[in-house]
Image (cartoon, rainbow, N blue to C red; front, side, top):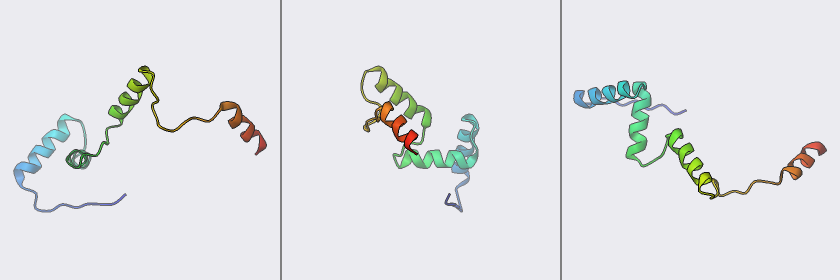
Length: 81
């Protein structure tokens, strides 16, 4: 995983990040990644992603755009190996 080092962070910004990390029970590095992801509009929250998939399943929709293979075909393929 790539490493990012940030220097000369203003004291108040560092303190706010540290307070958020403590509230959300994350390390400072985890909180920094979370804040960056939010700022870049990238979803990292696995829980929210799972809830969205479950909601789609309950509504009768497809949780994923890909189609699942027929289980019988999968078993046959496996037996041929």
